[in-house]
Length: 406
Image 1 (cartoon, rainbow, N blue to C red):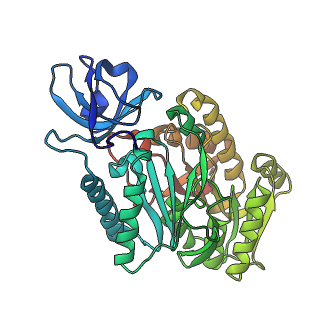
Image 2: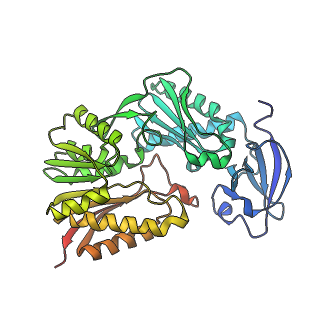
Image 3: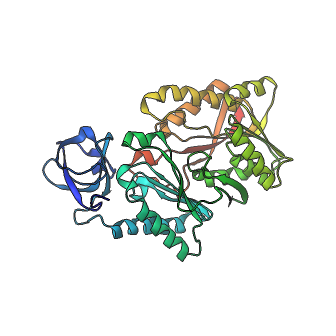
């Protein structure tokens, strides 16, 4: 490396009145908040951030290619960013997971919420999958991974291999090329995990994002108690996780729906793994097309689950996303038996809890259904919500009992 990655190479000074999110506890400094930059060095090196009056605000990684000009690593004035500093952050992240979640498979590092901005590390049994979305943090991933391997080995969970899934388009906004592949020796990228008593095959190379959506772990568990003896419709099933939780809980019949043939084939394989193929079935279809057909056929279900992908990944597309969420919830509600249950969620942080609640209410009015809230949940604790970092609070999950208007 042609530079010292732990050396602060520039000083960034904020405009007067800017940095409100940073001062509230956030970790991002945007380009339009900066009054001046003194110093130089390559993009991705460290920068000291100061308020307009020279007050030290901390140290972060700097990148002129990104509108998020600085991603903060520390707000402490008396702290230097060193290799030991990073290793301590990783140790803290692992200790937190050991106290809050089942660590057989979990997210060990969740970017900003673990004060390691732009880095995600998921553990699937004895495989680690890393996603690096920040140029500055990308240069520290060797330190992060080496510390994780050491910690896991010490706790009797040796790592068999590491796969990188830095293939998200957002990486290009940092001036980085997309990358997907093995870090170190190659291994079988299909790994079996167990969660809530359900077995899954996870393909870390070809699956969505890092291979499997760990954030719904305890939301999947929450629907189990509703499903014994029930008929269940699981929309946007992906590789079958909600459907299989319903099946393992004793559902009489489950139908899982997804537009991806690859995902459906994996879901069927997962049903076989759990001995559920006779009661849990899957079909490849567009949910928006299928639900009106089921309604026209007079089909009704005891439990309907809606787990769609993010309908918006930008603030400007929120209005269109609202229409999608309203439509899918209206159609889903019409398929719930009187007294049955609807589980519905949004994984876009641009759909705020208030906006999502309002949209569901509009759908209920349109479907002439009354809702009785059973639970409101968010993402699993291994995806912690860092207050003042709005992007870390993205998953909203409701369970309602649904009754016809009386």
